[in-house]
Length: 333
Image (cartoon, rainbow, N blue to C red; front, side, top):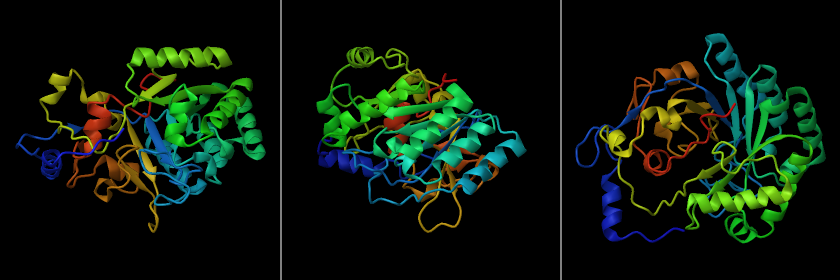
């Protein structure tokens, strides 16, 4: 739950993240280099069938800040991966709600036909449950089996808390979608949130009971099968990440999302899609890395150091470095 910031916190936040190279107290800002491009995310557009209370990128039925990317535009990046031998194994599709994009089935087909795994982040509601989409998904599952995985956003294992985030009736519809996926043998993962004050063990136990009651093929104590995302309270003041923080946090830069993934978006009004460091920094143009993966690998400007990302955004601390979040599970196959 968001809390009002104190005047002191507001002043501190304004001083932070102002200099790409130095933190507010003058220390060198941490950087994360791309170690191995394993997952390429494609944002299908910010339009969504629902408006969540605290959507990470403010998707809604009216927000088309990121417009629908086309099958041909997505295919150009698959071509670049093949041509330049990028070690990508997974193509992730996120939104918005990916199944609202009219080219989603074509994009999934192209990714799977080229031998990649495909991961779709969906709310499993009406857009996914349209008869034409269901028939197409069944055909893809038959052709590609477990290389197609659908990660369904189920913010909490109780109807009350899930609907608090996503609106009345959404839990029932999402569960119906998961039931359909499970009944037809799809590879499924769940994504929940951690904003209700319970510890991880209790949350996973709650999900485990629901999963067992509905016979879903999901393992609640597996971080890849049930992903629990940190809450993104934009009202909360967060520390900046310096080079020294890695030892303090007992974490490595290689664990950050931007060490192994990039995301493709198309902003309204732009002629071409753009490469971004990760799935979260969609509303800050200065984090655009170029229009190709090759350009992104060499990006060198305010926020980039010869392709490395300077952690100069509150989300870098809030979600990744401190929250331990990553949209791609590191060990998913």
